Amino acid sequence: MLKLRLLDLEGIEISNLSPSINLQLYAITFIILSVSRIVCTLSYYTFILPNLRVRNIAIIGLTPAGLSIEKALIEKYKNQKINIEFYDDRSNYRFSYIAKSSYTGKVSTLIDKVKNNLIDDVYIALPMVAKDRIKDAILQLSNSTVDAYIVPDLYTYKLSVSQIARIGNVHTFSIFSSPFEGLGALTKRIEDTVIGSLITLLILPVLCIVALGVRLSSPGPILFKQDRYGLGGKKIKVWKFRSMKVMENSEIVTQATKNDPRVTRFGSFIRRTSLDELPQFINVLQGDMSIVGPRPHAVSHNEEYRVLVDNYMVRHKIKPGITGLAQINGYRGETDTLDKMEKRVEYDIKYLQNWTLSLDIKIIFLTVFKGFVSDTAY
View 1: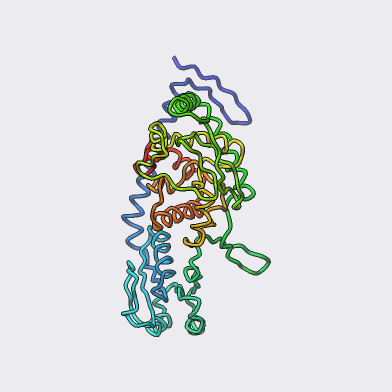
View 2 (view 1 turned 90 degrees about the vertical axis):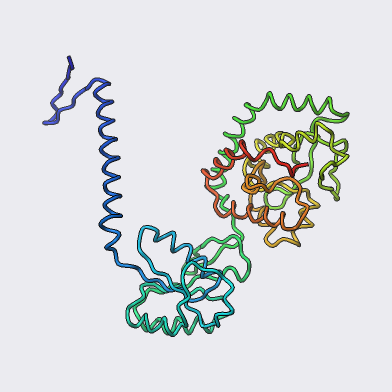
């Protein structure tokens, strides 16, 4: 029989229920909340969404900036009806970009629609060099009540990293900034220390087995250090298991290639499986590297590619990592062509732009399943 102990505190009764009753109450509450959410969602899509007024949006400029704002608007209004149209005074044959929305006509056509209150928002996405066209568009739009916005044309300068900063009443774009400053740096360091310590303890048996394999495979030291660029482009010493008969750390470092005679048989195995890089957890605990970040390249390769690849040195705004976004997307190992290095740098900068703690966890998780073994790592 259920026993209740009731206390009367200023008219409020508090009951101590048995664990089974509490469990039933939790289950009922969960079911009610789940059903309510489903009903609300279905009601919105069935009754409210079809009756919402369509938001009409115009983009001046069928340009990279125009395509970028189009994509952002589609994402922003994914739960609302919108109609996006492009307007541009240039001839149609000059349009080399494929947009999801239609090209409607000249800017003069848009102005007529604006004056007739047929447009809700206008986004000016013209190149910076088209200052006269921008001023003319602003002037004509100022004679209406439409909401107008200017989309900064960062593509003119091939800018890969940008954050809005306000200094007094002046807005600036921080184009080569890093999210790993202040609280971001502290969060990243705590992540590296906690996860790095845990992983190091878990892989200790593997480290011992690999060390024994290196010792038995060829004469020479088990571990060695190579110069790499770290945070801010400063040189650091990176630990690795020796996988070659020789150790290169000079100004000229030749990348390992398929069937490279310098690589030992056991060395080939640990390079393909990235086991040669496990000692870099020492660098992580020392604070020179991070678990997730751009892979460190040889100093000579940095000097070579910094003049060949746009924004190459931006990847050094963060500590180098044991794994990274490029690695889980297949860009690890030998970079024998320029386009491979460009793609790797593209992913490194994308990581820099979109870093979150959850993204790091996702990259670590994916590395375990598909990021270690590679046919292109020799």
